[in-house]
Image 1 (cartoon, rainbow, N blue to C red):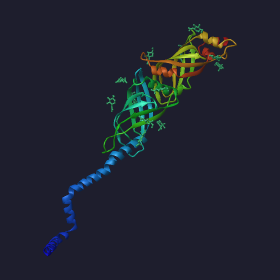
Image 2 (spheres, rainbow, N blue to C red; image 1 turned 180 degrees about the vertical axis):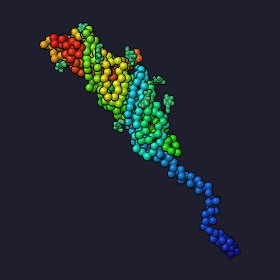
Image 3 (cartoon, protein in one colour; image 1 turned 120 degrees about the vertical axis):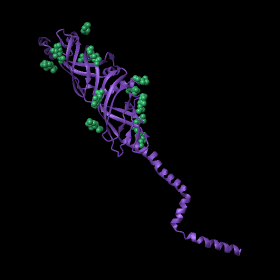
Image 4 (cartoon, protein in one colour; image 1 turned 90 degrees about the vertical axis):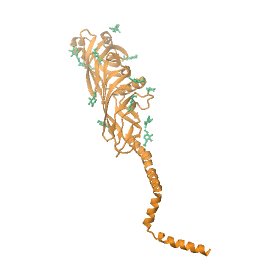
Length: 339
Ligand SMILES: *[C@@H]1O[C@H](CO)[C@@H](O)[C@H](O)[C@H]1NC(C)=O
Ligand SMILES: *[C@@H]1O[C@H](CO)[C@@H](O)[C@H](O)[C@H]1NC(C)=O
Ligand SMILES: *[C@@H]1O[C@H](CO)[C@@H](O)[C@H](O)[C@H]1NC(C)=O
Ligand SMILES: *[C@@H]1O[C@H](CO)[C@@H](O)[C@H](O)[C@H]1NC(C)=O
Ligand SMILES: *[C@@H]1O[C@H](CO)[C@@H](O)[C@H](O)[C@H]1NC(C)=O
Ligand SMILES: *[C@@H]1O[C@H](CO)[C@@H](O)[C@H](O)[C@H]1NC(C)=O
Ligand SMILES: *[C@@H]1O[C@H](CO)[C@@H](O)[C@H](O)[C@H]1NC(C)=O
Ligand SMILES: *[C@@H]1O[C@H](CO)[C@@H](O)[C@H](O)[C@H]1NC(C)=O
Ligand SMILES: *[C@@H]1O[C@H](CO)[C@@H](O)[C@H](O)[C@H]1NC(C)=O
Ligand SMILES: *[C@@H]1O[C@H](CO)[C@@H](O)[C@H](O)[C@H]1NC(C)=O
Ligand SMILES: *[C@@H]1O[C@H](CO)[C@@H](O)[C@H](O)[C@H]1NC(C)=O
Ligand SMILES: *[C@@H]1O[C@H](CO)[C@@H](O)[C@H](O)[C@H]1NC(C)=O
């Protein structure tokens, strides 16, 4: 036993020089032996910290920034309508106050009125840099074959309402610097002025030809929106208190923003008109007829455009027609004095 103790003592004595080795040398030795464990721990720690940032926080920040951005449509031109398509040339400005300005890759966005049961169409939004004030131009032919109902609701909203909303929805890829590509939801609703039922519509310089059936003049059509729309050849019914007295036509009608002054041709049943204004018991003995004008069809390149026809039919225009003035304009002032 004593021998053993002595041995232990000896062992202790022989190990003392090792204990005296420098702290750094020991650390060095430890790392030489355990470097791989430390590397694994380091990698795990780095991943534990960065993975949530890259895969949890970053997508959330990216999505939240995309949510906060907004669109403003500054120009929208509809042209070349067919029953199943229309060309749209649209300029929109992106507002992005976030400090990140990621790349948003090209994506298909469905366009719809908010709450609609089906989209109006799908449009390819080009790749863009999400800078504040970035201008996005979409110049494309929209297929309108997804839902005739959605298209008709859209044209009715554009023509009939003071303002309407349009929703763009898609799931683009987004990339910020060296971070990975990330799918985000792009769900933007834009509020726009509509054509407000063409309120303010009026007729000027009306004349009837000496055959007393052909009528012409100028239609003044205000368009308070930024939308330009080519509606082709438009036929309208002209009535007084619900009784049709004629039809009128607007050829190659293009409604641009602001006041439009377009030539109007028409036919009118003079017998009916005279019946309305002559005689002491007539309802319109002042000679001023309250016209009700309702579009019935839009024809473009020989094809009826159902979604325009429907929108026109849903919108009644009202304007007075002073028959005395029309006769004077027509060089038939003598007739006016007789009435
Ligand atoms: C983004 O907006 C959608 C609604 O459009 C919402 O469901 C989502 O939680 C928002 N995401 C973030 C990260 O703000
Ligand atoms: C959208 O753009 C128009 C014209 O550029 C501007 O008058 C309007 O204030 C803008 N609207 C918003 C919400 O930024
Ligand atoms: C679309 O609009 C842009 C900007 O307003 C214009 O430069 C371009 O020529 C238009 N494209 C067509 C086909 O009219
Ligand atoms: C958009 O949709 C069209 C037709 O479905 C498809 O060919 C095209 O690849 C899509 N583009 C993108 C960027 O998803
Ligand atoms: C169109 O409008 C009608 C009446 O508001 C509605 O019942 C219908 O669901 C709408 N259609 C679509 C495709 O949203
Ligand atoms: C709509 O028309 C396009 C081509 O004009 C076609 O690729 C697409 O499949 C059609 N979609 C439907 C729902 O009919
Ligand atoms: C887009 O956002 C609106 C309101 O924020 C929501 O009602 C709608 O369901 C969203 N659309 C999609 C396709 O998620
Ligand atoms: C109406 O027709 C007459 C005769 O054809 C013509 O002199 C006049 O300029 C036309 N008025 C309008 C507004 O087009
Ligand atoms: C308009 O028509 C209704 C019946 O359709 C009639 O009761 C009313 O008296 C008419 N008004 C005028 C001013 O003729
Ligand atoms: C004009 O109206 C009268 C009376 O309503 C009718 O008898 C006549 O057939 C109409 N003329 C034309 C050309 O429509
Ligand atoms: C409108 O009608 C005129 C005369 O019939 C025709 O020359 C023109 O091409 C038509 N316009 C459109 C857009 O179809
Ligand atoms: C109709 O026009 C004539 C000729 O300009 C004018 O004398 C008359 O006052 C007008 N009638 C009404 C009700 O405005």
